[in-house]
Length: 141
Image 1 (cartoon, rainbow, N blue to C red):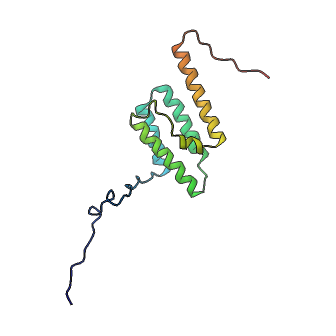
Image 2: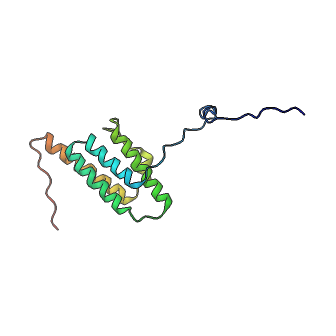
Image 3: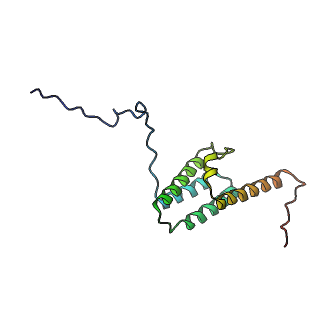
């Protein structure tokens, strides 16, 4: 019987691209380090007014999800916020359109929040760029 050396595959020797596999996604950050990273990203990369709005939104979302126990929901929440942190730290997000698939998956409440945010941004832009613009007065019922 002839003894043959075993073939040992090192991780670097196994090509993920040749097998048609995607590279592994980055590991998820735990909630508190992710929260701090987002606030740091706001402080470093956003103008003051956007930072204030972003900080308040992040704080309220993390507070609202503090007691969530569903692992699938937690992973989805952390994944999206980690993606957001990466976008804020890069400069490519400005003026970028949202992915249609993400919009289709949003609940009615999330769509309403998104619409309110869009309205607030447009009103602010109008107020800054159009000297004749006056904000709409709230309707009284």
